[in-house]
Amino acid sequence: IGTGSATGAAKQNLVKVAIYNGTKTEGITKIAEEELKRKIPNLETVAKENASRDDYEKSVVVVIAKNKDKEGKAVADALGAEVSILPEGETATVGAEILIILGADYIK
Image 1: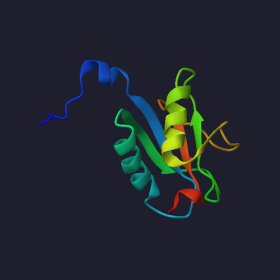
Image 2: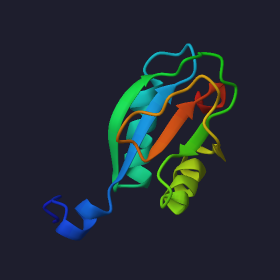
Image 3: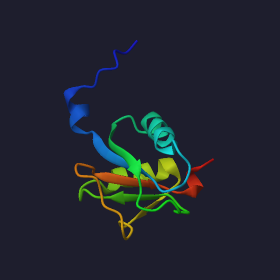
Image 4: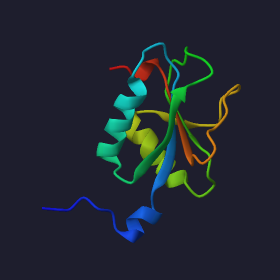
């Protein structure tokens, strides 16, 4: 039985994500966060908030940190989303390495 504690090396490999709700459906950032943590255990959520718009059709993953392309792709794959540039009108959360904007396609 594992203790659940992260080793020092695992801690350093944490990927900091911000999850934005780009829909009118409340509570999907929490659902997405739980799904992602099951699939990618080294994620750390630094923010969950609403996107500037609530009419995103497709979920997008924006890699903010230059060295996190591989992790961004893994997050996108886990959510069935596309890696994209930062949509106009959105601002990335300070400290986030990857920004996730959930769209209507996420609501299953």
